[in-house]
Length: 353
Image 1 (cartoon, rainbow, N blue to C red):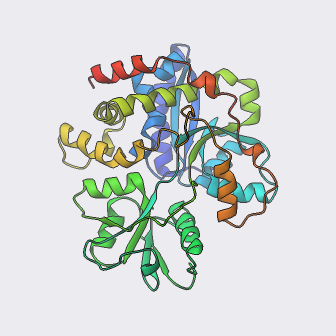
Image 2: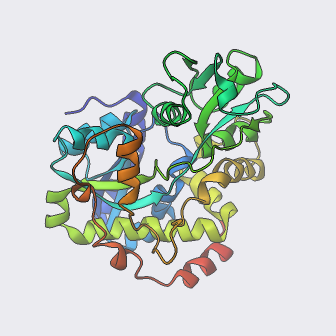
Image 3: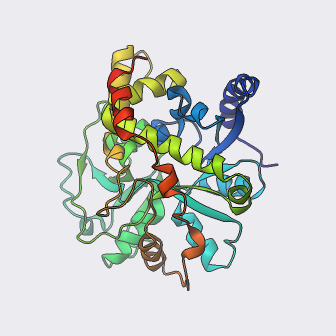
């Protein structure tokens, strides 16, 4: 068995209580692996289906497990410790290139590209990515996706990410913003919702202009084992539909989505904040992320996967891959989207925590 973090144990224990009551009502437990050290609003659309009744409607109750890293999620899935996990191409593509991607499949894209930026302290004088040469760039963790993606972008611009800049791991959330504010780093490479969390704490940020023609890479996916999909397609579709409904709910009323999340995870509220302020902080934190729930492709259904993203990722990472079809399936997308989105919007408008 994969050794979980203490936080994973705590999350699992809390969710297990819900699972036991759910089983009593005839619901199946679905174990969901998240590559975070603690629960965060960045995965809000994958978990609030439990509060909103979407999971129950599909016949399951959700047990989220914060497993620390994307690698841990992959291991847990391969060992059957979880049923579904969050998948990221920056970890999956090297496995595919080495011929080690065999048993799993991405079936729903719950966050679309591109979600990373580089922030600087206002008035720092750094005006472009090229001006980062010789600077100290902070990243949350060397195992997080902000590190390899930003390295790849610098490489595309002609900089050497090993020689031209210095990388410093500064942690997640507000501590990363504090490191920038206090001058421990010159710039912070981070992701949308993380920046939102920092700004919600009152730390001022300025953003470097994105380089032209950034590749559409870095989407995040729901993945499962092919054996699970074959044996229990309805469960996999059901979870995808619950996530899709939750995404529509949040887009229709972000404050209601935040309130539902805080009802489930009150410990994620800023310390000492009122209920109203906590909702506002979550809404600000997820504001940049919710824009990525909708596909950036004309006519595409929510959750559908564009294989060009995988091809672009392989090119960006200088990986030789002959095919990407084994990474994904779009066969479930029509079923996942088979619900009344207007009814979900109405529910969001009427929601009271």
